[in-house]
Length: 531
Image (cartoon, one colour):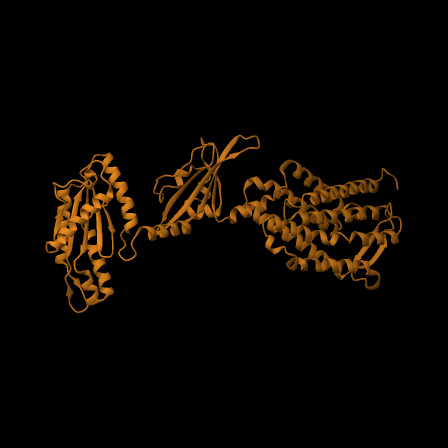
């Protein structure tokens, strides 16, 4: 066979194709941790190398016996290439959960039967009815008469490759432009061999030779170029996109102009206005309602990560998100954009709020408990002192409360306390503090309120309590309360002194007949002034 003959040149290209397949298999072996589908790619390229090298030897053979031997070797690789390529595509588009060995073994049943059929064909002729040397060929080449299993094998291979193409094309429509170049490479890598097989079956190839091995040269070269130039299979880009879309946290990506250039499905659920038409728009144009802080936006002048918690209201539901923004950097450190991650912390925040509520409030009445009331009152006292404003303090309890419990039961006693709390709330302003100081004893801290004003408010509450009996199951239950009122007149009076003064005034109310309001005496000095 002359080195200048078309067959010799064809053999050289086929060998180069095999070498490229070997190199790709080696690359896949040493980078198999980068991408879950790299093993499928390694097997696909390894099997392609077996197929192409054996085909080169077939073309170089000069007897029917040698040709049959190398055809058997070809089928060690060729039937399994298509299912391995399909597995690669499935990994690439994020269908990893369907690629477990216990689920995909069925893809290799027909290729395995094909291998057996080819190697034992002389005994049954199910794959080739006849293999004979072509009489008018310039070198030893065979003509075949296909058997039944030849068509089964061809149909399975074509169907498998069509399935891979269908997955790539359907995902190509949904994916970002950034990854379409890589998907186009994979599409060509599947389409070219499939087209070559079709032309071969139809008898439209030069000299009637199988063009697939030489087409694998072009697809292998294309893979090499794509790996070098676009990082194909380096970081599982389509699998990355699948992860991006399946993240529970909302993710938004912005350019330097603060325009939205990408977002995932979780972000679209959080912000319903995030639709494909939002790409290119600024965030404040699509995020206008729900945030208590108003329009939400991030600048690009922050050097470090920025984080805040946001309350977001959608319909009747309230959600809490931790918003984390960071710069998007090139390898050289240049800022090219901005990412925002929206982490749903609703359950955590609601639990914190519930625990805080339990720590701050009285379980029966829903007002502040003693510890938190004192803490907040101390802060309020310090604030009014700095602003040189008056502050007054009211302490009161329920008259003869033990008799109510003994006569009507503790359940009615609890209702009586809740009844009194409801009345007091009608007379308090948003800035006033109201707490349960003891069993049936309550305290009110009134900022920016003089002693006379506090006395007037205490009298209003006393009158309404006396005029509003609790409706019991059999008869109304009359309830009265006794009050003690004081004002912080000295500059540095401690809260404990005010409480003690109000308590002394309350004690006087009880000893003067109850159901009355008593003021701390004007000529009294605060206890800390006596020291």
